Length: 110
Image (cartoon, rainbow, N blue to C red; front, side, top):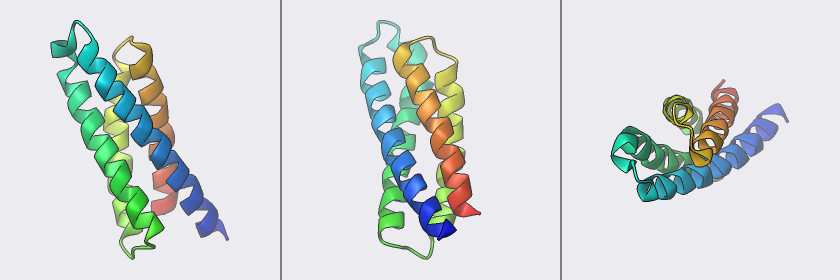
């Protein structure tokens, strides 16, 4: 039962994180200083892609879901730390979603 709760929480966190990263990515590109946001933009893309992959693994009940979620947690944390350095609301919202997802993914991977 705990594993099922962890997988549902992780699934929901990954979807929310993917959406936040996609929003942040697109909004960063429209900022005047988007050249200063290049690492944020890169990590937004990578994190959104990894979250989508984790969602597919969880939904398919992949035997590798735990390892994929562990990797996803690391990427989410890196993205969160980068986004946290920027004052834009979309970056702050993305950082929050990424930290939440990293925590859920770690529980899933445990």
